[in-house]
Image 1 (cartoon, rainbow, N blue to C red):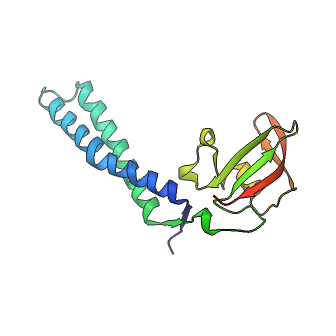
Image 2: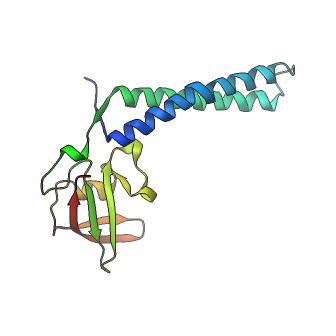
Length: 157
């Protein structure tokens, strides 16, 4: 049985764009770099050749990873969701112990970016939030110690 990978439509689109870039720009560029380095002769001491081959390996691995994730994607659009519990794709406003608010959308692991306010449902905070409601308090273990948050708002944007 194929394991589905939950992701938002935005995350799915970003992965499609990255895959297209790798296949149409990055892969051809590294192939040209390998051909140019080969033309320089002795490959055993050719740093450009070895660097290009290493980059090619990273590109091919990322292409395979992206193709796998996209083929197993279970796209969930928040705008079609509702309710009073935190679920995948929901946007949650939290207040910390000092009443400082922060807002996060619960997303798939491949699309998580804390700076953009997108946390993975598999992260400690994501796991703590799933299934909770407005007014619930959650405790999360962080590298700096235990943190406590209260759920202030749940939105489906």
